[in-house]
Length: 64
Image 1: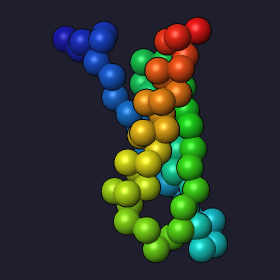
Image 2: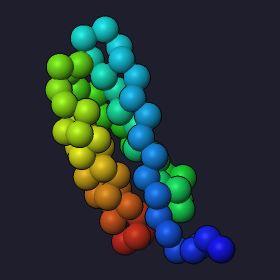
Image 3: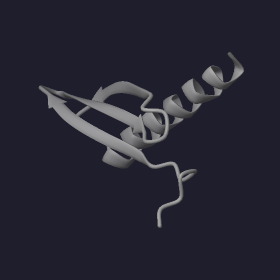
Image 4: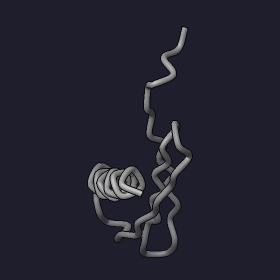
C-alpha cells in the first residue's frame, strides 16, 4: 500500500549545447521548476540547485 503523503521529486535533465536544463517536479503537487547550468557541472550539484528552488517555491505557495 502506498503512502498518500509521500513526496517524491522527479528530475529531468536535458543538454542544450554547453548547458544543461534541469527540471524538478514534485509528485504531490505537480509543481515544477527549472534551472540551467553548465554541462560541465556535476549532476548532483545541478539537481541539488533545482531541489532547493523547488522547496522555496513550495514554501511560497503554502503561504498564499
